[in-house]
Structures are given as C-alpha cells and as structure tokens.
Length: 322
Image (cartoon, rainbow, N blue to C red; front, side, top):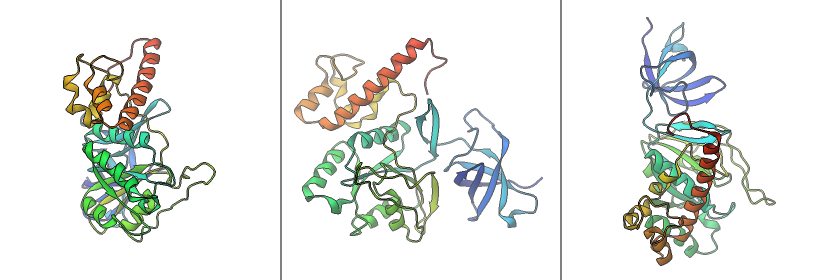
C-alpha cells in the first residue's frame, strides 16, 4: 500500500486542495468522499490550516498529486454563523491578527471587539494591528486607541504600508507562526501581507468614496508561505461577524477586562446589563473599563439574547451549544 504522508492545507477550492507536505513540496490533492475519522473530533472535510494525512496518486509523489485520506483533530478553529449554520474559516492558528484602519474605512470598534471575542473564545492569541496610521489627523488619535486596547490586555502594533512603520515589528511577531489577518474590507490586510512578504502580489482594493467602505478583493482563505517561516492567511473582509452558537451568559468571559472586577458583582451570575451593584457597570462609570468596549459587549449580548429567545420559542433545542 502507498505510504502515507502528512501536510498542512494551504488552499481549498472547488474540492481541490493545495497541501504543504512536511518535506516542503506543495502537492495538489483531492479528498476521499468519506474521510477516515478515528474519533468524532476529526473534521469531516479539510479547511486551510488543517493537518492532513495524504498519499500520492498513482504515478508517484514526483507528480505532486495526491489524495487526502484523513484530517487530524484541530487544535483550534475560527468559525462564524453563515446562513444559520457553522462555517469554519481556518484551523490551527497560532495567532489572529485583527487589522483595523484608522481611516478609509473608518475604524469599526464593534467589529474589532467581536473579532477579539472570537479569539478569546477559541483561546487563540490575538494581536490588534492599527493600519493606515499615516492617515490619522494627529498622533494622539492613534495613541488613544492603542492605549485603551493595551489597558484591556492586548498587544497593539501600529502600521503603515505607505511609510513602512511597524512592518518589521509585525514580521518579527509572526516569525515561524501560522497566522490569519481578519478585519473590515479595505482595512489593508492584503497590502500588509504583501509588504511582509514581497512578491506575493495579492489583490488589493480601494475604499468606496460613496459608501466609505472597502470593496471585497479577497474571496477565499489561502495560506501563503513566507521567507521568515510563517504561514499567513489573507481572509475576505467582513462587515459583521456573528459568533457561532454562543450562550449570552458566556459572553462576559470573552472581554478580558471584565474578569478583573466581575467577581465583585452583587449577583452571580450577572449579565452586566441591568443588575444593581454590578461591578462591571461601576467600572465603566469610573473609567476603569472603556465605555466603547462596554457598548460592544451590550450590542453583542442583546443580539445573542434575541437569538436565544427566538430559538426558545421554536421549542427545545436538540443539544447543548458548542
């Protein structure tokens, strides 16, 4: 029987997969209709970032073609709700880089906080990348955003592809890691990756003058190899991001700064939305917790609570959310 090999999925498109073999070659693969699954934790189909077992097609590995036999259990995954079902964007990340432009398009704090909550939920290290800092009207504008996210416990790097600011520092944080860039359309994800690894020539787009929003240029998730040992994924721009099947009561644990004070809330559990003597709300009033972060939390909580109520009205759920 043909010997099996292992590798990492770089690209998944139209039932074809590009797999980076452990030997360093890229092999074009198709997947078996029914993949082997040693446990229920094994995915039913591969996505970029997945570790797979594959064998060469007839004719040998020299042809750089193969068949994926199995997907190994994932260490982590980034997923979202799409058309009412779970959509896995990418697997086995070491780092999620959340790109937020200071201008063009205007910084969307709500989306930034949603993506940070997604990383917290999956226990993936996250990094806030403030892009296009050359467009800021004054340095204090960038410094204020940086300070509030650093105070919440996040690493922040300021970048500009026009001046080169922060690109070297970001490259060092990414060295030898698997990372995905996520953020709004037009935030500069593709351009940043092109500056981190010249020669990739990823498609980039401009921001619409009429809408103030970026145009989608990346349509799928691909992992790109770099000379500094990293695998970098450019992802399609998002204007909203719904966390897959999260209970409203779990949301507070995804906002790091809440953890420092919520133990002092009068009621447990506390939703931090209306209860008297809520330590989180008191911290917002005193300025210990940023009011913008708190507004993001409330918007997410209300959204999840509404969804939860709709599901409850439909009848008993078929199982606990995961």
